[in-house]
Image (tube, rainbow, N blue to C red; front, side, top):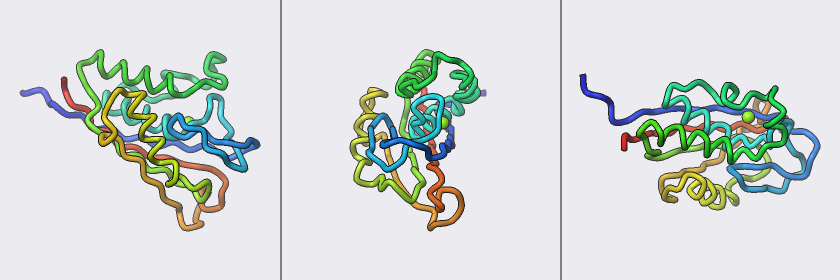
Length: 162
Ligand code: MG
């Protein structure tokens, strides 16, 4: 049997809104009337991307690698989680082909920050801007995101064998 040269992974993450004046989205600080409830910095974009990368490698999920019960990760910059996942895939002989991320919330408006988020993710992953897509949608006022109770993000990644 020939070894596969590609792997696919998907991720999903949610955080509830809470007190605060900004969100971290893909390593970018976005001013908002609320923050998120989280043990780390609650960056849904980075968390979903980590889960997609771990999923592609069949290496579990972000909660197993960075347990919320571990005081080391209290208030942690989630960029370090992403860089850990990136190191895991490189060690195993893979590179990120591309990533496609969707952020779901009514507010804040993510579109105006999408380019900054793409640039930051490309920098963190040492890859090209056109390998990273960041899209945004609302859920048409339906469900928890529609009621403005929280923010969700989904990601799909393709890994390519080095
Ligand atoms: Mg999370």
